Image 1 (cartoon, helix red, strand yellow):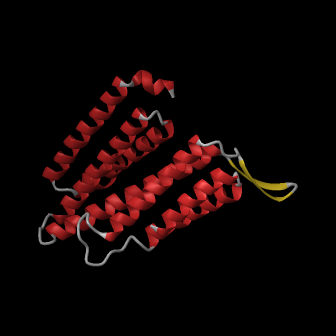
Image 2 (cartoon, one colour):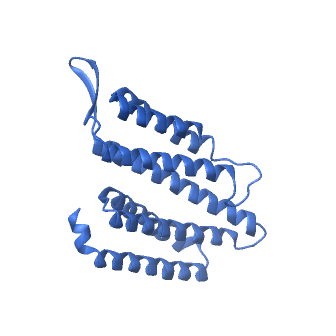
Image 3 (cartoon, helix red, strand yellow):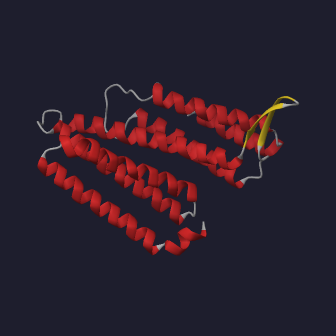
Length: 219
């Protein structure tokens, strides 16, 4: 949370004083925040589904990254951000690449925390059930597909092509998992259920694209 507050301060300082050093510092801070969440904050003692410190930490971090992405997209920052080492040696950070990177970071964190919560929640409630692995694998695939559909929908509604493309990329993950792992390892009833539900989700996504086809073409 403290790191998130620091990020907000850097964002508004960059806006107020028009100093690219604040912008670069914020980007570095967000990368460090992402690493901290994945490496340090991913483990939790005395796990409680949903209501735990890890969820709060990830939610704050993800929200901060999305806000930074929005700010970089909308505000009139220097584009590209140029960091010169010498007259002939410089690094350029283009706004569109920064926004794509931030959206990707936010989705990696969301994907990670959703997967972790699903696995540990299944262990918490169904630890003594023989079909635990089947339940966990089925739940993971469904959560990934639902999340991907949500991201695609948000990208279409908000007219954010980059977000929509990220959602399409995420949608590929449960499909790949289905054919590489689930098809060979799930019990028959779980496999059939997964095929049916994923099929319905893909149909819904296709219907969404068809319904908003003209809107998608605009961006």
